[in-house]
Amino acid sequence: MMQHGADLHITDLQGKTAMHHAVMGGNIVAVHYLWETGMFRFSDTDMYRVTPLHLAASTGNTEMVRYLLREQRCAVEAVDQQGATSLHVAAERGSVEVCWILLQRTGCRMLHERNHSGLTPLDLSGQGKTFRHQQLTMLLNRYINEPRDHKPRDSNILYYWTLFFPTLGGAAILLIASMLGSYGGIVCCLLFPWLARSIFSQYHRITTYQRLPNPIYLGTLIAGLFHSLLCFYEQIVPSLWPTSPLIQVSVVHFLLVFGLFCKVLIHNPGKLERADADPRFSCIADLVVQNQSPQRFCPYCELFLPDFTKHCKLCDLCIRDYDHHCLFLNRCIGQGNHRLFLIFILSMVIAHLLFVATAIAYLLDKIPPGGRSLSRWLALLGGEFWVAVLMSLNALTLLWEVWLLREQCDAVATGTTTYFRLGGNSAHQRSLRQRWVTVIMFLLEGGRRVSGGQTGEGKTPTDI
Image (cartoon, rainbow, N blue to C red):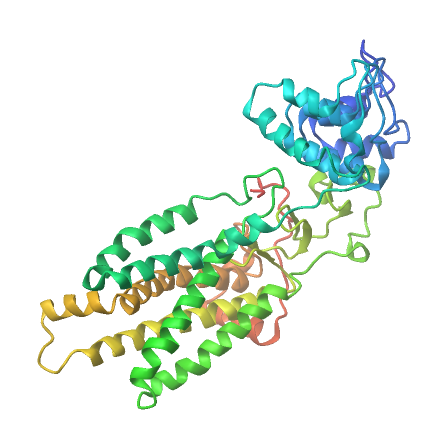
């Protein structure tokens, strides 16, 4: 609009500037660009003394609120013509998430501020009739008697309960099945699908006002490793050790898998540091002049992104050579840990194969020679439901991991990542031998030249 002669000095009938309207529209890049022009301040008010923070609170845009609170851009204590702070505005609209952010930033003293009508944020939320108003009233009541300088912190109780729910749920099902004897297999067939539905129907974030990343899928991976290793070392190994070489190989490999799992959880995924930001751009105006996409500016980290870099909202980081956010690791996969992730998936595929093979050997060892009829097999599976259920789950997981490994190897072989994979790349014309050489070299050395000539600006990202 500025290129076509738009006048940024114009205000509307209420005295709102372009900055105010950009805040109401939720466009952080536009807000940052307007601030860079030097024509606007974050403390600018309209004729009713409404600040940008008031407007962000009224729309319930948590990302805009965080942006305006960063580096103390907006004064949280600012009041409008009616004496209302941004917390009053958010409480009146029942915006639980915004109120939580404001309380964490300013402390509980804002709960005692009154507008010109003598109402506190708690009074305004109590007047609301919706469920969100009721939820907010409960939250504010919890902190109304806290010291004024107390700043609430996120509670991790629900996070860790969600993390260990698959492990505890699986253990409870197996315990109930063991108490029912030969009917245990039937119980497992009924309850494990229910457990799977409870897990895989959840969202990427915990549905509370804290909006923490949901660790349920990481908990599922932990549950699978825990129950498989427990079954292997408690049930299978004592029966076949030390006569079976397959058992000896499995014991060593499972320890390796556990070590890789711990390492991939703590390894840096390739966080973009401020010193590594794209040096070609110093302000958003540079993007406009060079005809670049506004997506090259990350409004959350406030960095200019190099090629093949993306911000992950769950990790709250910009990741170089971004591949994907792995829900089962609760971490991003990028430049720093892509090679390690690929090795981990490969080791998991081998581990599943070993578990299924050793479980079959264990079950065959339990049937006397010449008595392998269908009725004996059914009786055996009912009695050995622990091994049979975990063998089936490992086999199903193996199919998914083989597909995942294929997708990852294809991305590496074509010189890109699964997120930034583009059609028409010349790397797709490589021969099968060249692809295999590229993947093997990546596994051995970890180096990769990501190619494609684009950074994914033209695609529609799926942000989570």
